Picture 1 (tube, rainbow, N blue to C red):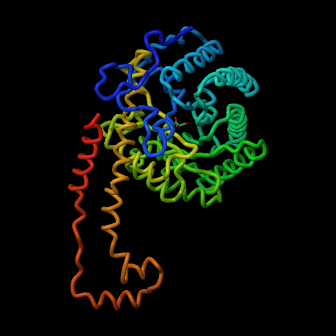
Picture 2: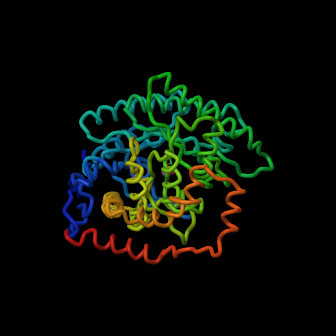
Picture 3: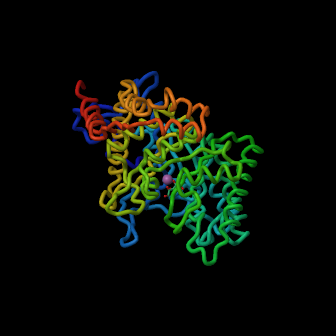
Length: 441
Ligand code: XUL
Ligand code: CO
C-alpha cells in the first residue's frame, strides 16, 4: 500500500532544477568540511505535524487531506506507521520524533494505552530494521488530555503527577526499545494560569523531583539517552517554568540537574520569549548546553506559535553559524517541528514543506561554514574586544585588578575613545556571503 503515489524518491538536482519534488540545495552527500550535509544537519520529521496534524485552527475545521484518514483507532495508527516509513524513505531523512499519543491512541485505562503503544512500537521496530531512519527523540504528551488541566509534574494533584510519571516511564522504555538518541521534556502545562491559586515554589520543586526520577529510571533500565528540555515562555499556559534557555539553565542548576540535561531549542519558542533564534542557540552553546533544535519559524505579525516551516535564509544561516561553532549537534538534530499552512492541505504539500525546510538549512550551512572559514564574524568580534587582550583589560579578565586600581586607571584617562560597531557593514557582508554562496554552481 502506497500513501504518496504521486511522489517518488526526492533527489538532489541542484540550484537550477525546476522539479518541485527535488532538493535544490540539500545534497546529503556533499562534504562541508570533513562531514557530509546529512551528517551535520541530522534532519528529523515530526510525527505529530506530518501524520496526525489535521490543520484545524481555533477558528476553523480541519482541511488536511490524508489518505490514511479513512481508518480509525488502531487501524489508523498502523496506517500512519506505513505512511511514515514511506515518507521517510522518499524524503531520505535520517530521523523522526514523536509524542506517545501521536503514534497510538489512548485507551480507556493507562494499561490499555500502554498496550496500544506496545503494538505500534513493535511495528515501528520491524520497519526500522529495513529503514535508515532512526528515532531522534520521543516525548510524553502530558498536556492535551483534560487530566492535565492544572499541569502534569507541576499539577496541584498528586495523582496527576503519578500519571505523568507513568507516561514518561513508558516513554523511556520505548526510547530504549527503539534506540532513541534523546528524550525531550516540553512542559506545555508546566506553568500557571494565575498566581492567585498557585504555589509556585512547590510546583517547581516537584518539577525538579520529576526530572530527577526520570534520570534515575533511565539509568536503572540502562538507557543512556540524552535528556533535553525544550523551553517555551507561554502557550498554552500564561507562564511556563522552562521559559527560555537562561531560565531553564538556572532551574537545572538550582535542582542540580545541569549535568543530565541539554536544551532542545525551537525557533518559534525563542521569538515568543522575545529573543532571536540565534540568541537561544548562543546562550545554550556558550554554556555547553546546546543539545538539539526544533527547526521552524514564527510570524511577527501573528505572535503565536505558528510553527511554520523554516524558509528565512538569514535565520537559518545564523542558526547554522551557532551550530558549527558548537562543533555540531552531537546526538541532537534538526527536527522540523513545523506544519504546512492550513491552505496547503494536499499530501504532496508535506514533501514541499520539508524540501523547503531542508533546502533552507542546507543554504544556511554552506553560508555559515564560509563565514566561519573566512573568520568573518570572529574577526569582527576579536577586534571589537581587543582592549581586553592587553594592559588594564587583560588584568580585568585575568582577575589581577580591583576597584582601587581601576579608579587609578580611570583618573589617569584624559579621554575615553570608542570605535564604531559597524553593524550595517557587517549585515552587508553577510548579504554578500548569502548571495555568493551559490554563484559558481
Ligand atoms: C509545542 C512544541 C512541542 C514539543 C514537543 O510548542 O514545540 O511539539 O516540541 O512536545
Ligand atoms: Co517543539
